[in-house]
Image 1: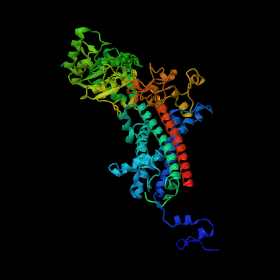
Image 2 (image 1 turned 90 degrees about the horizontal axis):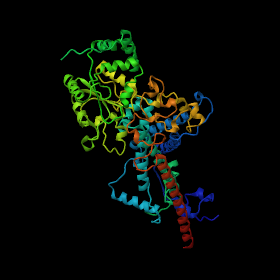
Image 3 (image 1 turned 135 degrees about the vertical axis):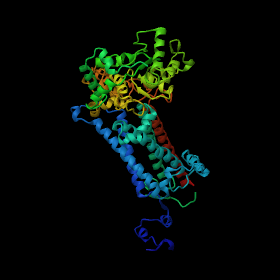
Image 4 (image 1 turned 90 degrees about the vertical axis):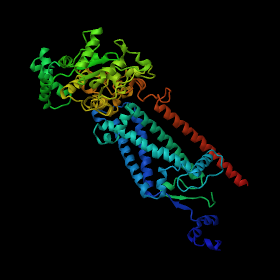
Length: 254
Length: 360
């Protein structure tokens, strides 16, 4: 067997000898092309949060618009609505704990762990890049730029729908939970003031319902954008939230 | 100043026996959620304290509060409270009329300056200098300010005085304004409802006369003992809610079985009141027991929260007849559709690019 491999690529013996890599592959392979972005607590939070939001949206929808009445047994032994509400409250508490854990990690983790919480609105270049990314989505530029963390557009979406959105849902959600927990309870002590501020609990319910729909819309966009970027952009997206590594597909500059 | 009678003396004068008086004290104690130990305390206070006069004024209202008040479940409670409070001035109940009545009001204000309780039924309209409600030839708002000046505390009877009720519903042409937004320098206790429950009204007055202070209030200024929980929290149909058994239509079998009225727009889950515990008309029934959902009459702005039979609140914020679900689902649908189109265009672009690459 003649050795076709150029001298600087000989170190990738395994790939060559198993017939797994072409010379072009090896050219790519010798460059370091991945950055460790999302540490394990961030990844864990992401998936726990995703699961909690799914449970919250489904059960929340059913609390507002319950399933058709069912006659399984006597009302004493039947607890359909009760279990749905239990799932909602349990998921809400997990979401809350997770979010506080995420804030803790913003302080303890790497710089990417903080990105979601702050928008660099005074940075003119950031605004330029937001519109650049927007143009990429409008098919007006042939290819996007490389980003290590969130791209500027995703960064803004994360900030508004997640950082502010989850905060809003936690505040209104706990204020609603405080109603059932009763006056003087812990949730009431912390969040009861919100109902006093808004006045009518119906408005509070309605605001929480709007929050749910904004979450649903975010999830639609988020999942689509993540898959699309994974296929069409110049870096990995979906696998990054599994392994934490952002890998880049080409060696060209911006 | 003339010697003022004690409550007990007033009651005895009304022909109430000591035995009935003690019954009243224990009834009041339990209505207020106090233990048996408070019965002698109430009795003692009633026997020794001079009665506190109450001035009852009426603004924009329908008199349903007065109607409710004189139908107290325990007839004795009503008699006692009515004889206890000074009815020198109350449009519906006073004997005098015209100048004599107005003079009696002035008398009471002068005589008990800083010492009387002001009960307000209804609210003042502020537009056109308050000309939409004239009492004794003057705008009601003037009378209210005048009487409130020397009051010890103010009770806002009903949804009108507490929140504005129907006359303050959008667009509120007369600018009917709840009492606490007009009088800001006095302690105000809100007793909302349209009308409030009679026992709640007598209970609040008795508490204030007996203990000489306001009962414990919640964040919205309502007596916590009666407005601390939602109708839903104590509803006898609650097990059907937890089971997921609902009335689906007014004439279905579930309605006959007495299932939960949640889907029929019952406002029990968002309404703070004592209807499901104290009930109405001597404890006979309350709306949900008679098969109709709660309309949330003791809540702020209950006329502007969509229809009485709407489950999810109608959205007034956007000024369209759509609710949160309609708006949300439409938005999600539009976003979902856009994503599908965007994905298709993306795929086409990608294919085009590949072809160009292959050709180039």
